[in-house]
Image 1 (spheres, rainbow, N blue to C red):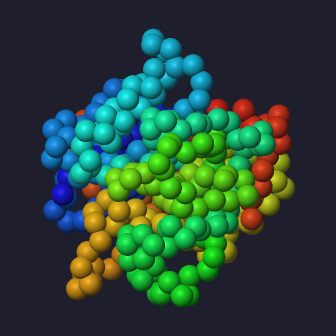
Image 2 (image 1 turned 90 degrees about the horizontal axis):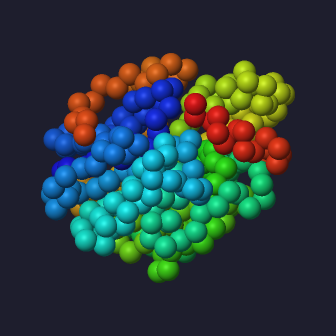
Length: 309
């Protein structure tokens, strides 16, 4: 199968982060391409493409992205994914955080700064709708998860989040799959070929601490006590990152028949391949290049700008 990661993060500290998605969703024999959307790179021969993954970013979908500005690539990417969705219905599109917001905007929804004016960072509980429980990719992932059966599944999922913007209005015809107290649109789908999540299933609490929270403390944007509060809400609490990653994997690939016995990768197995998360990722896969804490209003904009520098 052939897939592509549309990389939307140009901050040097996150270089190589696309390999997390490749490792989480890929299988032996796949062809995975890496395209730096912020440099105007896009996959070609879309008719032979099986799926696209649109990553997170410290850039925002809202705002004026003038033609010659450093963010002019954002509306260009929105046009590209809209065209893919409309003209190539067999291509699956998955977006996480910024990627989810970009897809919502491209398909006619609305994205703004978090309505409460606060930057959300930490662990969040997501209330699932009936619709997500009826999805074959989700049910298959649950069967392979620590829950084992749909009957054992709790009403809420727990994931880590880091965002200053969010989807406030879904595109017409989209379906809400999960919501939270801070983010009414957490997981959603559009037709059979779009799936999105505001959370970061590819992140663990340790990744968030070493890549984001420690930076806030270093730059004086968070006190050590506030940082400890955030981390304590995440560390030692079971998260559902593996379940959501497995859902994404089977959304992109299709649900295997019951005879499939390929073990799903745990998040720990995925992340340990890249060494300490306090240093740049060290990718090994061959690719083709082509309870939370909400921060106060004053800190929100500065944190959003610095979160992934």
